[in-house]
Image (cartoon, rainbow, N blue to C red; front, side):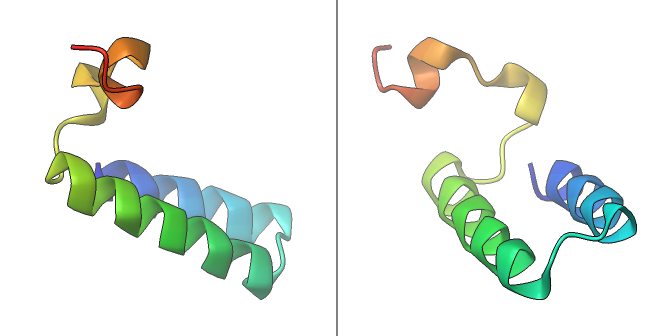
Length: 53
């Protein structure tokens, strides 16, 4: 998931997102990464994110 975040953040910087917005997104990504232990983002499903598995 951390690799996906790096790509996403780079794209949003190019698009002109503010540093504050990117900081908020970075925090959310860090929390998800900590919770899911940096899994491959493609292995996440809605059910898994919602804790229904």
